[in-house]
Length: 115
Length: 112
Image (cartoon, rainbow over all chains, first blue to last red; front, side):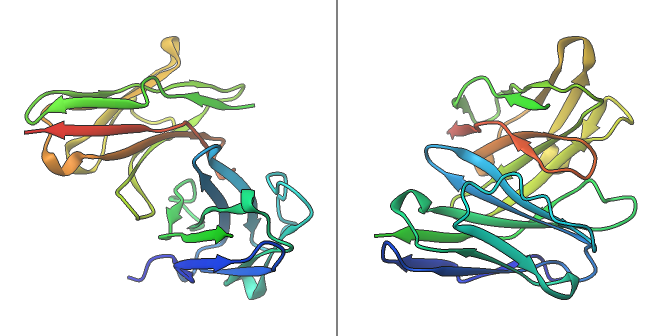
């Protein structure tokens, strides 16, 4: 079946612009996660959605970062007023309900470059 | 709180040699432990996971890992390295369905 998809695969933007990154989780998966992978910081958790519960935003680095998940499916990560330190690969993952709920399946990522 | 330490940012082995990638964890509650592999310009692929069942876990591509509570370790091994194993490997810890806390990764090189 189809895996987690992310778009765009690459995004180049200018400092100060806003960007939106999209994640389509595996169909039927109830949980969705965003992570950031950068040279200086490694793999960092950003935000976690589980069903209709309030999201865990504890990993968002600043108020310029926000995310939403519409209809319990697609998610959009928005970065406002981008800075050069936002340059990274943004990874999305989803996990199912049931026996395999502890396993996160990752998408290919969006590489963001802020000039 | 949970954390993961991966010893050795780079490991080099010859093709056919044993692969050993080290991971130590810290967790205030029984942990769930994972190994993921990342090939260049790709996302993360699950190799194997420990979720409180058997302590010796077998994964894909011939890899396995043993959970040792007394040593707080979850080292990844493969008896015989193949050229296609060259990649970056990440150990991670979580509490069931919570976020993953990753180690800093180990880049494995395999020489012919």
